[in-house]
Image (cartoon, rainbow, N blue to C red; front, side, top):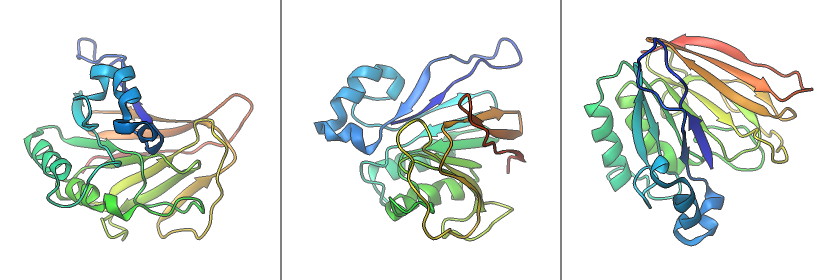
Length: 218
């Protein structure tokens, strides 16, 4: 399970809650239908049993998707995503789901079945995508759905699997991988501005690895 903590917003008066907005991982589905996940998080996880939903934070549209169910082009989830993105009027978009389309980890290979979700986000000029699954940290340059560098429309992607479980290793380093770490635990913090975003790897106490940067929205 991954999650997106919705922060207090600035300026004052913007309607943001401090509740966490989760999305399911493969281990949640070790229980049939991930019923424990849906029962625990309730409405914070979107419609029960579906595992995908969206919400807005200031100028940002945030989309939580479910990589444990069908994601093929024309699937219910993929069609919902396209309709959701088409209806959004926000200038910036960030999405997150569990299985990474791009990763250099030696444990879990890239999950190519997620590409239709990435394609839909690319088609609607989304900006950032965040994944888990592999127990490492990795940052990629903006890329198109085929994995080619694309500084004008590509999504910047992150594998943020450094939450506390044992680390995995790296194998063949994939194209456009810009930063990697497989020894530090921590969290990936995003600061969402009106037309840009900052990212920062925040290590746990006693560890020193950091990674940070900023980008404007498309």
